[in-house]
Image (cartoon, rainbow over all chains, first blue to last red; front, side, top):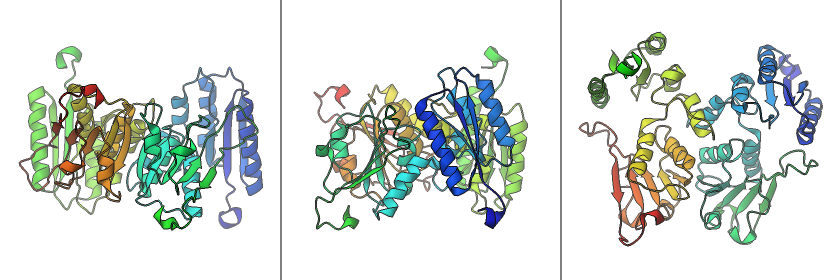
Length: 237
Length: 237
């Protein structure tokens, strides 16, 4: 990229507090940046920082022409207003795609966000790489979070899947999951989806992550391609 | 409102071109404003106006403290970039709720848009007024437009329904519609949903509108409360 454009991309991370899992994430982001030639900027603030402290650093990074992307490591300490802080990130540096304007552009037909949230984008990439047909398929997303469930359902719909979002208030989720050709499980509740819930031939992506297990440094994608009906053409999935 | 706050609310409408249905809409909005004491502002531009003409009027209304809401009558002439024009409306005057920032705030959990699109809001209001339970119910929205299908599905989900969006690429829509406790049909295709698609006891809201019939001045809501099983408690719907 530097050779092609003369610009070295810069990614800034703001970490507040001393959660070990967050520190691991940030460390690994930094390593990944080094591996691909992105300049890392990093601010680690103490747990008892004020919202104003964080907003000040965001404003600095918004102005800094060497910074092209800003990540606010979540979760923030409880005394901070997450919405206010995420909204302060400049829309064209919102590489997590969590700013409501990016969310709105993703939700609208015929519009494109500046950035798509990475985990949902990864789910679609997995389906594409494995040659899984999405158009017209029944997709069930389990979980309705802003970070995974909601944006992945929008991406699946943009690919012409017929999408149902199952959540904590859904009655008989197993009945709905059983109809799915594609299942994206993004609940954080381990072992929620049972084998008996899954239609033979269905494709499952498990975005579940256990925040206690710090050895897991990024969302774990598991792609089961349950080809129980081996003679079935994959285009019929 | 004037007595309570000393402020007379003002609503501006920008109409481009001479579509009869649009003119009827605008005329009726004006009448409705008069009836409730809202000051109407109205600009009717010729079909061959430029984007810049429209953007100029939007900028004026954005600045005008007597104007509290701005409606851009859709559809705009084909030579105009609808997204660019809708995006120019100040977020706090976007009474249609079509600005992508309002769309994003609606799509996010625990956030609230400045304005909710009126037809989807009307659907939820209908359900509430008729005492229809939404939480945990299976809802099927037919149509995925930015104006009705998509926002109504988000509103239903905010009320804890389990929502599926059926659209033109959905295979066997009748199978999905048959599972619904609540159906919102927002397709514009007359007679698409057949009686045989509907589960006894399901609630249907038809937001269908036929743009040829100019006597229909606003989306027609039809609420069938198909109480085929008369002994069934409505809470079981």
